[in-house]
Image (cartoon, rainbow, N blue to C red; front, side, top):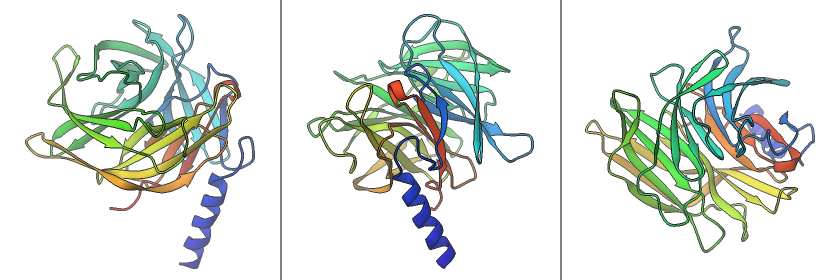
Length: 302
């Protein structure tokens, strides 16, 4: 128990180290075009010592990179560019693997367009795309997660919110696919969420979400003072989600979210709980300062 306590204390200390320090963060980008806006687990490396994941970039101009693959191991992270084959999105902010459908993903733009992708080798091909349902006035999306329970699939996404006067709005809906691959959403529910950290007018209450196998919602929040920072962010235990055998989606958000870790100097925009593990991969989009990734043990427990 003493060893576990010491390890937890060390991880908490690393989480508050300044950007660029040897704190468990691995640099994956050097500028505003290569930061991490979202992370999706792809699989383990062949030797089992590392994790492969896809990361999206929030680029807006034609021909700029939209997607990369990272191979993340203790002490090193490699980055490989991916080819985007199909209509180019503007401002990708999230990506998620489709459960039980190897090589297929959903990626989301800030204005609510969902792209269904099929990844083969180093190419991501657009299968279809569609807008999210029930988009609210002023919504700006940075998060997307999928939940598979009781043989049913559901999607969660959130307007990020803005400071004390605009909390995040978490949306949830059943999800199916048309025979040609278009995502199709069922009845939408909405829940309001305020992050416990960071404080201030620049707070984005939800900058990404991930769901554990037991239904815990793990959410990141962030503040952004401009392209050169300073940045601040946190990861919190935001609540729970369940999907019934009839496809009904039930979300219960915490009124006082428990902060699992704070990350001054970084803008966390990607959170991905790894299947069958307690670890999450975090990714940052630190604008002109580039992007970083690391793992943290935030996804275990019931």
